[in-house]
Amino acid sequence: MKRLLILISLCWFALRASAQFTSASLEASGVTCSLCSKAIQKALEKIPFVQQVTVDVKAQVYHVNFKQDSVVHFDDIQKAVEDAGFSVASLKVTGNFDKLQVPRDENIRIGDQTFHFLNGNGQILDGEKTFTLVDKIFLTPKAFKKYSESIRQSAGSNIRVYHAII
Image (tube, rainbow, N blue to C red; front, side):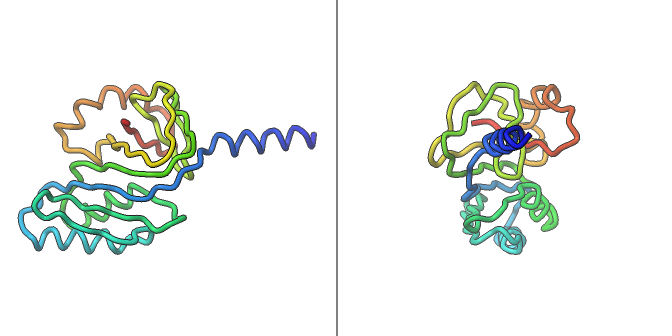
């Protein structure tokens, strides 16, 4: 019995991939002036796991650095932008990975979150890698159309699953 518990524990830790999300690049839509940009920046800076936000006003891109060893919740980023009166047009996430294999058509745990890579085909994420979240709340409606059918097919669980492409 003791061996079985040890084996189950080892499998659980092996399935929870080792990764640290370090930053994100967010494009906002609906931004018309520098005051709008400032409102989004202030909203993002209030999130507990955010260390720093820098803004490229011309491109409407927000570079968000996360606190080291913090748990990142991407829905909190979207909610902060929405609460500021805008929407997310694109969210690219960067993390440091340790030989994480990305399976085809399977959910994978990364830290405390579950991901489904729509273009996962067994490649290995090692070192610093960036991927794009393609859920409806992280894209414009036009961009989401491209992924909506694949996301609908992978849905069916009552746990939060982030859909992504590499």
